[in-house]
Image (cartoon, rainbow, N blue to C red; front, side, top):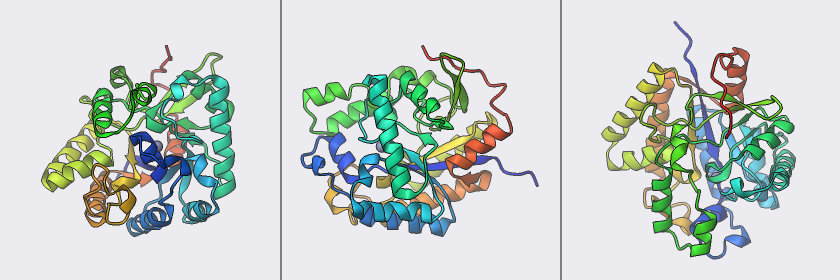
Length: 324
Ligand SMILES: [Zn+2]
């Protein structure tokens, strides 16, 4: 039998405060955490599925001893860790080189210190990234960046987010590129190498959207559909899987904490969109998604996936994209 192609799974470990912050809720700056509930919960679910994934961790969350206790469990269970910035500000594209450098290095050290593992991949909060960011990653010896989401729907998602939030005009201005511009939709879906000024390169692993249509199918969207109808969710996911197979697009599948847990367990965020769906229901949908994906792909963490991509040199013949 032919070996299945790989697909990688990653989770952006956004904490309670970062949801509150992006939503414009007071009290986020005391950094409330739900790690004590969420991390044991997600690790159990992943154990049941026998999955090893990548957790993109926010540096700020390593400051409390209580959080560190839970962060350590992640690597103890054999999962991979990535850098998700220090302060989880979704507008890295407005930062200077020095500011980005500070963000990356401080988070990298904090994550290494808390989990015992130095991250070798990065995902920008809110899919924010810039050329300076890629340069910093390359200079720190990172293997890959995973901050791009090639979809035309970014501006639409942003409009929805603003509508559901209590953000002031100024806060909205700072977040004006949240979830990316329309032009993000023209970016490549398949992994490729960015070529930087002096010829250095860094691998880009985009969050996979549906080939051709560029509509997202990460877990938040599938939970949304699955909660309307499981048939609809499976139909949509099957099209996405088929198109990825036909176009030979390797899948990088993204999860967020609130995709896997409901307001029944995280009461402080019970008012959030989608939190009326129970944890059991979300985990049930997630398991169906994983079942379907694993029929066609070997599911691995991002580090394993990137290493395999680099080893078989499949990026060599890919068009190298230059940043404007
Ligand atoms: Zn995030």
